[in-house]
Image (cartoon, rainbow, N blue to C red; front, side):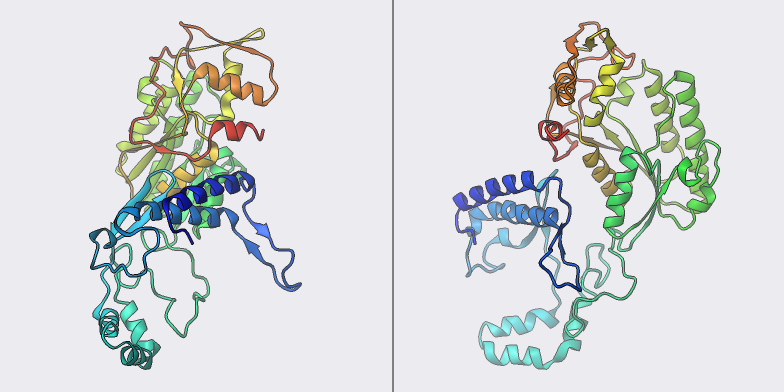
Length: 418
């Protein structure tokens, strides 16, 4: 129990240490459990829940204190909302859902004469309470969305075959084009973990977007298509042909299958990088998506941590890496995948969502630290006339805008584990 602000700060500091120690642990197996049962605890989710609790408690300090048993929603206006915390957006306040009189009236009566009112509520039986619960609007405004399956007498068991619900109130089939690659495989895993049917689609699984092979079959019953594929060649003509053919075939197959959301992964600053053939091709891909008539979301990500060496290799002469005088805000591939997954199960934005890492570097510092993590002895210098993938850039051309979602992973923490 945390009773003051000092306790909140201490708790958050302790969580930082716990997160560092559990960074590579998704599920911890309890070997001390019964021999005929498997016990596992999702440590990462537990840590996030603790952090969310403490952050929200910090927001309550003003009107309520950290611990205040006598507060009632009708007393302090700041208590008449719900609080939601995320690593990217911090604490948000949302209105409380209205409760039906079938629930509120007995508790109001209890303030005058607790005994009879509570006994009356109990005597009314589980059916009455279930009926009241079913009238509470869920997150989408549908009655009972978040309460069915939790009525007294039914325990917490869900009907057989139940899947986690998306923001639209149902699980989705999501086809991930490029779903066996660095980002795609992570997107598939994250969506499946949240109860969706994520299907990886790539030449390895019999789906070729350039020729159209396998598209009709894999898109059957799909609600969302996520395209994180990339050209096997970065030669200007080849990359343009890849994105033209792939996007043309994919959008046509989506329209035929009734897909309602197309999500594509692209690059922060694509419109500012048009001197380079690769980014010209990415711009063509984005324009085709916008003109397709399919609801869409385009996720613009900054450079990935994992590509520091690739950037260095492209700019190396002898033992020296010469890079452009620009800034960069790189991001961990896992954080990109999380952002793509969130976007996929959300409402189409029909525009761009930007994601970036939490820290900004000069390109020279980023590559130098990336090489050092792999004990690479090459020298890194800034060339005032240096290019980035063939493009001359202004210092801030690779930086996201002020509304970008920021990943949780810091480059220093990631590189220390390589």
